[in-house]
Amino acid sequence: MRIGRVEKTVDYIILSVFALFALLPLVGVLFSSVIPAADNTGGFQLPRTVRLQNYTDAWTEGHFSSYMASSVLVAVAVVVLTFVLATLAGFAFARMTFPGSGVLFFVLLVGLMLPEEAFIIPLYFNLRTAGLTDTYWALILPQTAQSLGFAAFWMRNHFRAFPGEIIEAARLDGATDRRLLWRVLVPASWPSIATMAVLVGMWTWNEFLIPLVMITQDQLRTAPLGLAFFQGQHMTNYSLLSAAGVLIALPIVILYLVLQRRLISGIAGGVGTR
Amino acid sequence: MAQTLIATATDAPRTRARRRWQPAAYLYVAPSVLVLAAFIVVPLLQTFQYSFYDWNGIGASTWAGLKNYAAVFTDVHLRDAFLHVSVLLLFYAAIPVILGLGLTIVLSHANRLRGVGFFRTVLFLPQVIASVVVGTIWVSIYAPHGLLNQALGMVGLGDLSRAWLGDYTFALIAIGFIGTWVNTGLCLVLFLGGVQNIEPSVFEAARIDGAGPLREFFGVTLPALRGQLAIALTLTVTATLKSFDIVYITTQGGPGTSTTVPAFEAFNRAFNTGQVGSAAAVAIALTVLIMVISWLITRLQPKETA
Image 1 (cartoon, chains in turn green, cyan):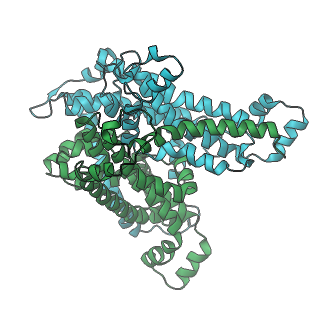
Image 2: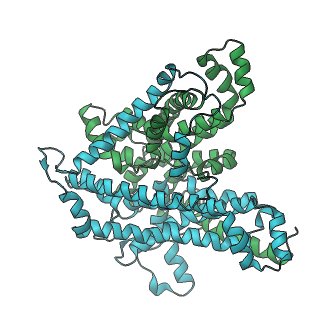
Image 3: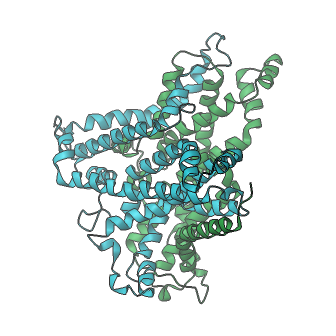
C-alpha cells in the first residue's frame, strides 16, 4: 500500500513536533553545560562561547570524579552478581524439574512489581544493625535482589527457547548440567545476556532512593545522589548542574544509541521494570 | 504484565515433563532465592509488621492496631498525598496514552516512512535518562528566568510567568507535565510498534470497504493494540504511583504540602519525622494499590497473551 503525499507530510510534521518536544529540554541542558556560569540564567540560550571547563569543574570541585567512580563500581558489581545468580536460577527454572519450582519462581517475580517503599524502611534498619549502611554493600545487595526477578525471568525465557537438539547433543557427549550451562548455553546467549546486563546496569546507574537512604558519606555517593546533593547546595549554578547532568546521562545515552532496538523492546516488552 | 508473569510462572516445563525431578536444581536456585529473601521478602513482611506499631525509629515501639491504616483515610496530609498522585496519573498516564492513541490514528501507516527509526530513537530518549537528571533539567526550565517563562514572554503572555515550582496552584501540574514529557514518547513508540504488526492487507480490506480513518482506527487499529495498551498503562501507571525521585528533586513536597505523594510521605515519615509505623502503613497501602491496579490493567490484555 502506498502512502499519499499529504499523509506523508502530515506524518513528518507530527513526528517532528513530538521529537522536538522530547529533544528541546535535552539540547537546552547540553547548551547550558558549556555556557560560563556568570552568563547562565538557567533559561534556554545558544552558547556564544563554549566553556568546556564547566565539565572539569564539575569533575573536580563538584566531586563527580568520586561520584562517577562509585556509580561504576556499584553498577558493575550489581550486573555481575545478577548475571551469575540469574543465569543459575534461569537455567534451573527452564531446564530442570523440581517440586516447588512454581512457587519459587513466583517469589522471584514478586520483586518486579513492588514499589521500593514496600521494603526499604525495614531494610535500612536491618542493614544499620548489621553495620552495612554507609558501605557499597548496602547499594549492591538490595539492587541485585531487585534486579533478580527481571533477570531470572529473562534468562529462563531465553534458555527455554534454546534449540533442544543442541542440548540433547551435548548431553549425548556426556556434558553435565554445569558444563551444559556454562560451556554451551551461556556462550551461545551473549546478545541476550548483553541486553539484560545493559538494562540492569541502566536501572542501577539511575537509581536514587536506595543511595539516598543508605549513604551519608560524601565519598560513597553515587552520581545521581551527588547531583541531588549538589543541586541542594548550589541551586542556581546552572552551568555546573548541567555539566554534571550530562556526565551522568551520557554513558547511558551512548549505550542506548548502540543497542536501541534491543533496549526498547526490553523495556516496552512489558517486563522491563525494576 | 503481572498475570502474564504468574501464568508463565506456574505452568510446568513442557520439554522435559517426564524427567525425574532433580534435587540439584535447588542448588541453582538457592543463591537467588536467599538474596531475594534477605533483601526484599523479609523486609516486606517487616514493613507489614511495622505498620501495626508506633515507632520513632530509635526508642521502644508501641502497638497501634489499625490506627496507622485508619490515618491513611483520615489524616489530611496522607489523603492529600493520594489525591495528588491521582492528579499526577492524569499527566503521567492518561494524557500520554490518549495522546499516543490519538496520534496513532493519524500515524497508522507512518512506520513505512523513511527515517521513522530516527524518530523512534528520539521519542524514546527521555525514558533512559536518570530521573534525577530529568528533575534538575526541569527545575531550570521552570525557574524564574527559565525556558517556560521565556517562551511565555515571547508570545506576549509574560504576565503569566512565575516561579512555577514555588506556586501553590501550579507546582503539582508542573510536576505532572514532566511525566507527560517522559511518557508520551514511550506510548507513541509502543503503539507505532503495535501498528507495525498489523497485516497491511487488513488496512486494504478496510479501505476497500470504504472505511474512513476513524472507522479504520476503531475497527482495525485499536483492537490490535490491546496488548500494547495494557503494557503502556502498566508502565505509566506504576511509574506514577512509585514516583518519588522527581518530587524529591523538584519540590520536596512543597510549597507547603501541595505536591506530596504517598512514596514521598513514606520516605519522609520514616527517615525525617520519626513516624516509622505510619510510613510503613502508607507503603503497604501504596503496594496494595499498585497490585490491584496492575491486575485490573492486565484484564485488558487479549486472552492469547494473558
